[in-house]
Length: 89
Image (cartoon, rainbow, N blue to C red; front, side):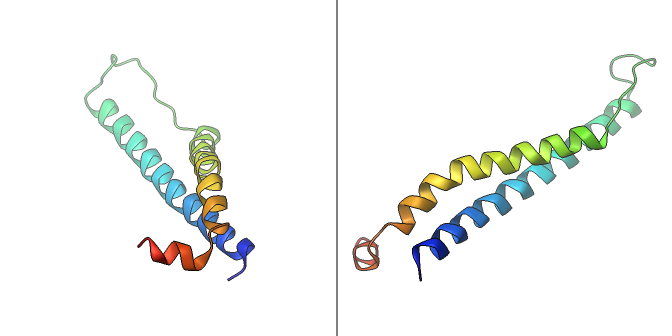
């Protein structure tokens, strides 16, 4: 495999994993808001609002985190000599 192929594989994996984590976090947040509404946490006049902007921000930040923390390991793996990499496993 070419170095660019290895780099892209690692970066895409990091993006997918962190985006799935972000989606689970958004679902957990929406669930927490529903629970807060049912039990009137914060008082009966408290308004809870989930907007597409903040959902997108949450998913976007998780994707950026995956990109930032996935590029260095991907670059490092792409620059390994395959024989040396297999020798240490």
